[in-house]
Image (tube, rainbow, N blue to C red):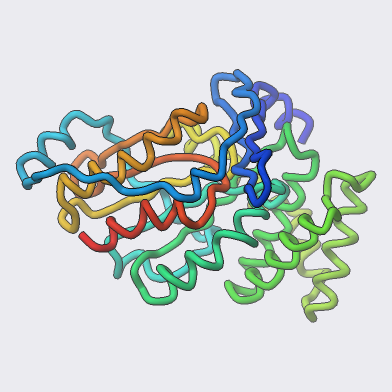
Length: 302
């Protein structure tokens, strides 16, 4: 693990938080080029972002636009990635790159995700893929938490994983941060206590974690995502949309929303797959529900 940490020592994490009343922290961003982005204060107005459209659009305009974009493959969905909904039956797939030990990821899941799940996932409008992206250098226990919860998912399935993960996210927000514990064994003991409370076999989980069965899979996938998409921090998102389901005007609407992040030092990106069948919008931060709604609503509407 020490070697692994050394290989990741260039990762730095910038903190984004709102200083006004009723504001929301929008997350840790790590620059892959080893530059700390710094702290930005985002006013409440980000919760009221509007959608601005163009006057006309056409299939030819969309195809022309797609040809100007960098081409990358769709993110991988592996056996260790919990999935909400069915990616095969929707036009919009959201990939979340998240760290179980990141308090900003926890904040997103407790404050923003429930509304997304209710309004977009439960009714089949989108699918959501949770991709483990542990920030080893920033969070001392990112490694143990990512392996432990991955083992829970693999051994006991989605529902048990979700229950365990929600317990973990809630505890983090109650100031029982894993980073405040004195050792990795302390974190392990807390996880085992919760596993026992849920009726899980801790010896089976221990065996899975200690075998490091998923360590290299997580680590290699993280490096791939960093090199392919420039993912460097958590939470980060890629929204992949079938180009056959949207218009050029829709793309302009979404880009208009995403471009407003630039004034806060964030840098959204847009990609397409080599066959132009998907367009992908990438951005980062534990942004409020109104922001996600402003992005997702036009995409599912066509």
